[in-house]
Image 1: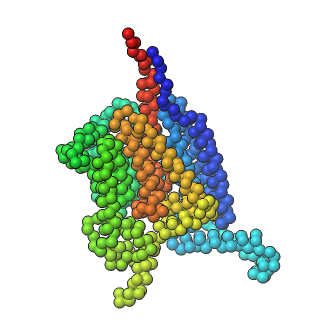
Image 2: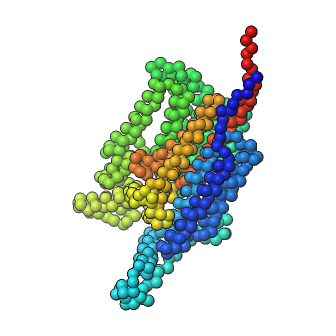
Length: 549
């Protein structure tokens, strides 16, 4: 009897614990830099909020030790380390943005905050760099240099312990960690996984009905009750449903003729696959449509493994992109959501305003004129063209300012707190990569991409190590959800892809997005643990050597 050598080698938990300590240390340095830069610019970032953000490492470490000690975790922990790094970077950049009085201000208060910061820096340069002769020439004497203007810190940001305890920004990360723990407990259990696979169709239908009701009756412009997106969590349920159905039918789908499976299996499968895409189409949420389409096609290829169908998948993606690209130049609508037209036109013509009568642009143009209380003369084409250009550049300000910020960041960045990402609208969410690129430069952006790459590598390894098709598809799907979403977000910021408004997982400011991302992380770690346990059991089985006569 021989005992085979174990093929499963995970990185040491002690190594990842050391990585957490390093990430914490770098975070401390980052928060100190933001506070120091804020004081130079004339405002005082809240030290209480900085302490709260750093204290979130305590429950993260508690989850780590819970996995190692209580759950006897045997899988790869690299996913958790990459996610913690991304979360730490996101928390730091959100602190930098929300502590700036200009970022949270509106209207005239925003301009006042900007002028106060500029005047503070100007006077600081005069006090520290000018000699007495220059000060006397400018102000009549060295002691007559004006005092630094007082800036009022925004009341919307937390400054006291009471504010911290009542803030949703405190409870969202904790809720995300609880979602991680719950997802891990559910998906490491074989009986619960089997139940999910058997009831895949029911899960999809039960998820679809309330989702459609919210989309049709309670949502507006892709949002629910203001700026929330509570349907982030349905991505998990839809993927579980799709993976379960695909695991049950992939053998039939492999039997193809001219590269196509039998219609009695393909058509019902297409209907089920379209269940989540139709509601997001109704929401005009092109980003989520793109993510779902990419993930579903990838899972189909993973399950079927037919080169001909891979060609069909690439062709389908090309047709979708080609349709939207062509439609962006059409003068009248052909049934596609108005926001989708705008996204594609913005991508291809960022610096070229469309004609004011363009059907998908006209409502935004008229809304701009109403907000600014402008009434251009209909007979004056020059005036109309000028107002139209103003309205367009106001609409694409986020894209253009984000690109300029990334360019200004260069290789090493402007430094934390020393750039101007606060001038980019919603920089804490959709365009947080632009803020990182401006203040941390190319090196900071590459560090983020490397962390996402590590996440993808570890997730693919989990999928390859799965023994059954259902868990293989789950691991591949949840990894793809995180990575595709990151690619679409970063590609949109850099104008390599159309801007979709989709968030950067673990990094962007957004409650439901963060909770869903950590739940997916818990599922992936649970599947990695199951793979390791199953492999260990298999390798510990006795190997009998046949006796030759």
